[in-house]
Amino acid sequence: MSEHLSSPTLPHRENPSALLEAHFRARPAAGAEALPFNPALSVEAIGFVRYRGDWLGVLVTPWRLDLLLIAGGGDLWGEIPAGQRRYLDLYGATLPFVAVDEPHLGPYQYSSLVDQVGRIPDMAAAREIARDALQSYLPPQPPPVSPPPPAETVSRRGFFRRLAGKH
Image (cartoon, rainbow, N blue to C red):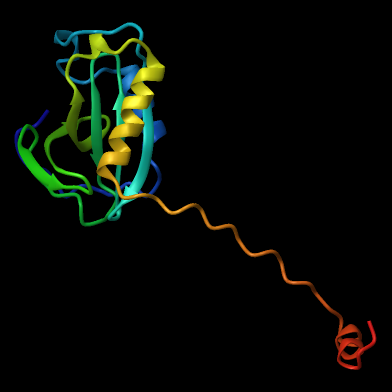
């Protein structure tokens, strides 16, 4: 981890869930070996959505359960040096976020949701904690909008037949 600001963070255009999972399965975060480890948990990115243009979601690992902020080009992200803390006003609270700059992943910021992961009995409980946190700190997401059905194509002849009242 570096202690200084490097070049500006490049925003993630796509959902970072798969990238986070692959990274933390392959190489745990620096210092993770010193943290309590829960073998009932695995690495999973949960509920990552764009919020105010940036990515917010929960990362579950066998050593931590954190709310993560990933730059997406929005107004929630703020550049701070690795190891520094900033406070963000989210939907349900003001939370401290700590900056990390992983060489193979890039910068992200996290807010710890559960420090004692050994108390989480299994992944189902971890997912429930993640969903509860996201409901607490993010405004309700509108349901996805379905595209309208395709318009019926009518031939010129059919158009004039309808105008004439002949179906």
